[in-house]
Image 1 (cartoon, rainbow, N blue to C red):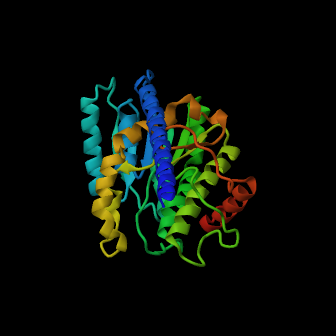
Image 2: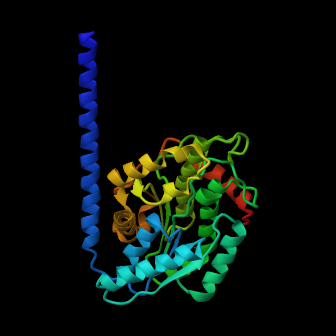
Image 3: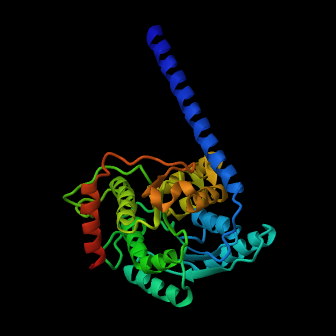
Length: 337
């Protein structure tokens, strides 16, 4: 008995040391990336960024970081009220941030869950802007229930993958036109890089049997494959998929009160605020990927972990997977090329 307890104690001690070492290493790399970000010397004046899902959380953090470097910013989201609040917040940050110029900050409404709205949004955006340097997609939803949109797609799948693929497809002509002018153009999807699971080739849309864990695993995996595909077909544009990690945002507040997960709201918020990265720090880390040479287009697609370093693709990530998932996606989105 004593031997067993001793062995268990040793294992716990080793696990604790390993965990602590990992956290220290993670924090060191994060802080180094933040330090490098602070040393950014060139202004982003004249550049244009669109952050879909930019009215709160990580998206707003990215918008803030870009605006403080003089980049003109559009934040897009569903709620005009939250959009107005985000614009007021960003303008306040610019006023106190010591910017060398005064970038513009605008809100544009979009219901990102609907394919028709994504297409309409792009058409309206191009009537106002003739360039787009940075496209960042950070829209999401927290729900445990199956809920189809009018497109016949589960809303989580629509927000987390399908309509991200569609938005990139829609904005590619404007992104390419901007890149032809000698500009460094980048696309970023904030979701879950490098952590996706296996693919069910017999049910690529995860429609036969609903499972929240399967939905999360599958469509985060598809996000990796998406940036790989677009990098292959448009090699002069950088495509980045990120895993933001635990960030202190209000996402937990979107959990419905009738969900069993609502019982965990309070402890989850406490834990999130205790160990999570702030949205402002996460925004800086993500902006670093939008301007750093480490994430340039000539280095292929990029998978970024939460501290701003690169992560590796999973064993599921093969060219076969890219081809199969992209073909399926184009069928769902009715994209003909």
